[in-house]
Amino acid sequence: MTSRKVFPFPIAAVAAWLAGCGGSAQEDGGGGGFQFPPTAVEVATVESVPMRDVFETVGTIEAAEFVTIVSEIDGSVVSLPFREGDPIAKGAEIALLEDSELAAHRDRAAALRDQWTANHERVAKVVEMQAGSAQDLDDAAAALKVAEADVALARARLAKTRITAPFAGVVGPREVSPGAFVRAGEPITRLAKISELEVVFSVPERYSADLARGAEVKVSTPAWPGHEVTGRIDVVDPILDAATRSVRVIARVPNPKSRFRPGMSANVSAVLSSRESARRSSRTGSSSSSTSSSPTARSRRRRCGSEAGAPTASRCSRA
Image 1 (cartoon, rainbow, N blue to C red):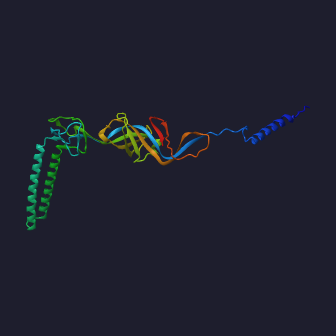
Image 2 (cartoon, rainbow, N blue to C red; image 1 turned 135 degrees about the vertical axis):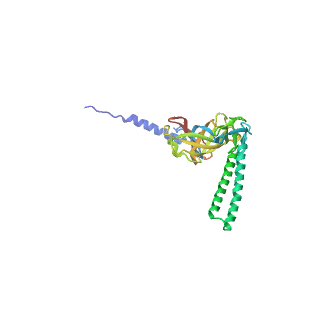
Image 3 (spheres, helix red, strand yellow; image 1 turned 90 degrees about the vertical axis):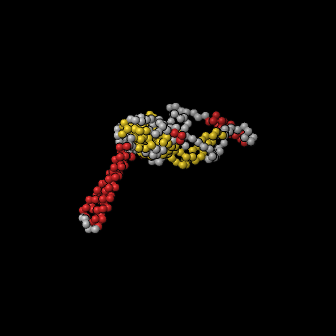
């Protein structure tokens, strides 16, 4: 059987020595005793700032209004009173077709209408004197209505020889020349409204619940670096694309100075949600003592992540 011996003297001696050091330190005013170093504290300032959940992607710029101007009737082009590439007002003349034949039809229809008007008046007087039947009056009234309809039809056909702009915009190049014979439906030129534009882009289905009509979007394009316009989401397609699992979105934006053109690519930043007040802190330095932070500083954070299946899209948070 083994035994273990205990030597209490060294331990007691060390304890007595430490006690003596502490006592002398107290007597000397703490000049030679052990002290912990000051604790380093990081100081940060806090501020309430707006925070937005932003979705970024690439879209395509399209004209807010676009139409191909065509002739509704067959005829020869008399003149094209517009300059290619110039802005034109609503109702401005774009093309004039030869109208002599249709004008003659209008005049003939008007003469027949006058004749049937006089006939209706005579029959009405005869019936009033009880010298005619009510059937005669009905026949005369029906004939007059047909004559009036013929006049309206002739005028409508004649009006189609004067082709005007359905809205204000910029007219494109000519597709025909004066003197050419055009068929109904044949293009004459194109007209686009570019003072306001549409931006079409797709959003993955995981973000579709956050989209709302009227949400703010910011649009820029590589053709004009540093030029950015702000608009609103106008249309959110109710049906998703089954192949890409994305929803088509259309935003309307102004186009000052007509810098953006239909067909350009667009960098789109759409706001999915926002908070007016979110507390954020920023590091301002370190100190050897504790200091209460002041809510006067401003911070900024951006968190982005690529969307699976959409390499040009990301979802970011800004403050």
